[in-house]
Length: 446
Image (cartoon, rainbow, N blue to C red; front, side, top):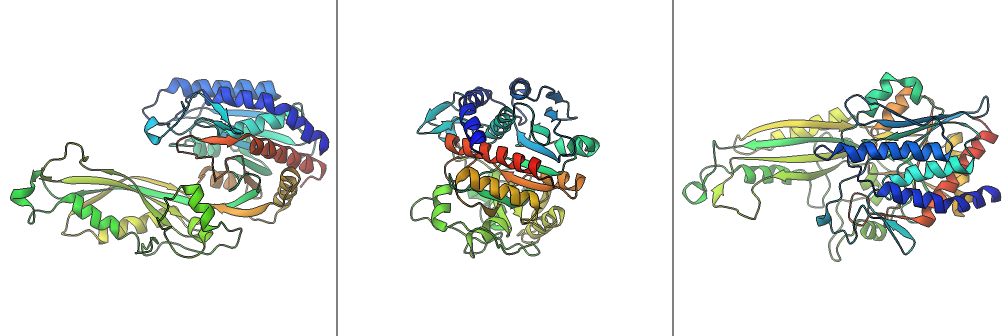
């Protein structure tokens, strides 16, 4: 272990420099953003993997979407096949989020590297690069490397995997798109919520009309929608849509104080929901109104609103069926609509929740590797986030184990927000854990 620890330590300056170059590429794969930086990022990832030891790394075209970067690195005969996953696309970084730096000009400050994608998920690419370099391109297991190009948006990779199952078949999937709640406290994620979302439209009038002449008689679509959305939660903030799946949580627990710090909850503002923190975050549904199309305050006029739209996103617990949960949501909103207003739904989005056993041999080996790398025992936890691709991979390789980890610490990484960053110490320890894990698998095959 000492040799691998020193090897990773000596590799980190190059790894960090490479990560900085990747961060500087604004690889937003969202509709409306230019394609050239995304494709540039794909090429930069290919070049990095080749330079790190995956000499056969290449771009594979994904129908309807951005290319996936793929590499196949043979290991010793009879060794298990391990697929390393990350993604090279990132969230947009509008300055109005509150950035204090240029999100595409990475800087190191107090031991953290700042910039969009520094954590989510170009740190995952850095982990895989460091892993290849540590083994000199000759890993102790057969490696497949998959770097997705549109995880943050409408991904087409699941369909591509189904059409090309041999490319994705593996004994173990290592998903470097997560992280510890607190730097230095190792966690393995074994459960993730799914998502069921839609856009609801409410229409009441043929056109906007004067609120003085008709207010109090003619129905306002915005008021109707507000009433409907208000029924999604009880007074404590629990999601109360009838028929939604719910369960309990038996893994590691977050404290409310830590969640307040991680989420940046303002002093004096209550947390919502009831029960343990992880039950609320992992094993219960959570409805969020993520967007409303309505007249803005700036330039508002005295008129009743004829039509309004909102997107409601529902996070659903492991064991739930996404389509069933979406049907519950739309049925609820339709049932509570007042005044016989016209209600329609469109843009449905579903992603199944994910869970994996917490006692398999690969996960046990990963716990040992994390303990060696971080100097303390690893815990098993869940995540309220979603990676729908994992379910497809699980279906393609039913007996495979999943290791979900990474360098995206929950307390300070600010993924999807302003001043996103990654702890360089955490990145080094996460990379070391991955290298130790693969060495252990090679020494004692599954």
